Length: 412
Image (cartoon, rainbow, N blue to C red; front, top):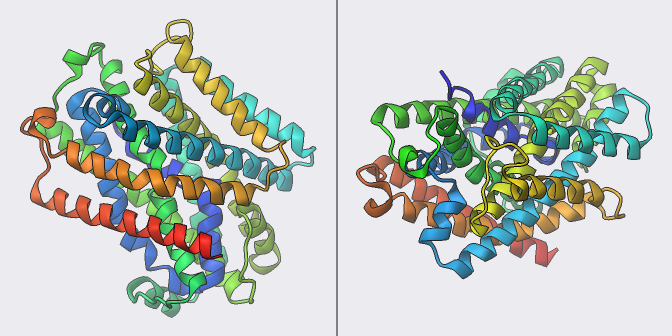
């Protein structure tokens, strides 16, 4: 039971404020015709997170520790830069989104909310034990169930829901393709890869396996348990994505409100259309999940940096035992906070982060596929034919989506 919910945390972190804004825009722009994207992306999300977690389980090391020893150094550094930039910018956008969402609920100056949220996130990461952080994140993940209520309060049309879910509809115009590529990129964000592998390692440390030698190896039962956990977590994440699209499709799209700049704007727009309760549930969902997503992004970035540099890292250590790791967490959190005071347009910052991750995420997935098929690394736990097929299809989709995103951004 110790590891139950690791996939839930990873999946919930995938539905951060910027992701919610993307899904809300998909529903507002495409209506019920965007619902099919949820079931289609689910197996790809499972593949990405399961393979990352499997690598951590079998090797007993975080993803970037394995990359440091097994992949070309120059390529790994380029991927690291992309991942750090993406994580920090997205964390900053989430802090700003949470502050804006809280502003709908409590009337305080925006700068006060930004600083308070950042301080709370920093204290949580630095002074909380791994088990405490894990258990709090599990509870916060459940806040996303608010989107089920928000969608039901929007009174969607059942026949259109069924058709939109099971009959894919694609229009090959630039705006539609851009939102589809954004959905793929958002649902397969780079921080998912590293967080799951590091959680698996932390769980082994929590169980008393404090050295790399004792952590190495995984039983069939452990891998099966990890697969089911990841499947549940990604199903939860994907269902939330589905209901976010549904709530805006049933209200904003139907009323002709086709452009949403942020999750906060979606919550405000829902109020006159679906009622105050739906609006409050929508706002509550992305405010609370932000407290989950920001630590995942900033701590995840600290893991990646420290593993590449060979520094001691892990939430199982006290701050005085891993000063560079906790220093990196503090630095990344403060930089994310500062983005909100730099006069940078948050949507443009997210576009920039998307471009950077468009170059880093595909090679990262490619390396994961190569590494999890090497007997020298995985022993007899190399991928089977089904996992391999799903993994390679996902890799091809990620490459295609990233290329399309970059082309569409430069054309725009």
